[in-house]
Length: 309
Length: 95
Image (tube, rainbow over all chains, first blue to last red; front, side, top):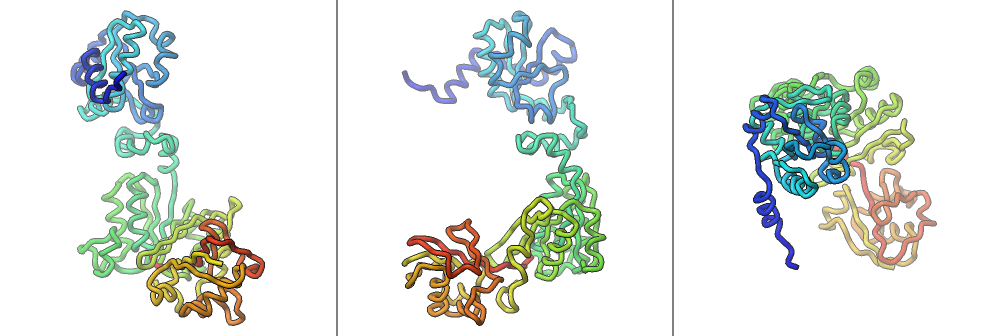
């Protein structure tokens, strides 16, 4: 027997299943028409938001749970998935099981959200947060719980330079709740090819000030702490108190070994980064969790003159 | 014995060499034999990799076949096999 292409299968499903626009679905919902809204998406997707009053059965579990959760086969069912494709095939399954009136939401939940219709969520995240972080919340590895952890995390970025800049932007965009930026330098024109927090307009400003401006624009949801001073053995432990983890993008061995030592004594994870020319190194050192520290691997910085910065 | 040697973040060696990875044929079978060979045949390798007493300096990290960390103090007793890859790596600080 000749295999059908995905396009042919989709076409056949569309011929069998009536698709309902989001506007029509919204009307059905607010008019309280007798209709079951069946959400067949993954739990991580559902956690980020769903249509009010929905019944939830994952697409691959419909055959197993439909009889129990949808006992009345005469009651119309409107299925929706993420983007409106999978629901068509699952609707076919329901139809084969004897459900008389099975329809699918055209464009899925994505179209519903884009049309601006209300969604519900059981998480404590705001609607805006759910929308901003939705593409990572739907990942099993993150989910709403992971996003909450990110929002509660406090990360100190040491150095707002070539490593600290992209790190800061990504962490802010991803919703790390509190970011500390430590630097004591000013923005120079020669920084701009790689230190993407800074722009022509920030040349001459302190890197911390420039970084806070850029990170606020990237995500105003993030609390920012500027530390416009040199980190020294005298102040490092006090600075660390406010943070859970250190991301070290500094540009010198003295600071890197100082941050490593401070993290070791404070029992906090130390994320090392170093780059030169076309090479980069990264490592996570968390001695409080039983791992080595930077000094366990490299007891001391390289001898003078061996490594360019 | 013939092995592949890789130098990471060691520009003093790789710049004159023009590459980061080379095939090295050497007499013997231990890491110490290999480093002696490198020290005598590759420009700057002796100064960069070895202390004045000929022991591998502890600011060099060594890996066998990519993942196995090698104890540099045991280089006389660490045996290599034909086709192994030995990586020498220096820490970098650029940010």
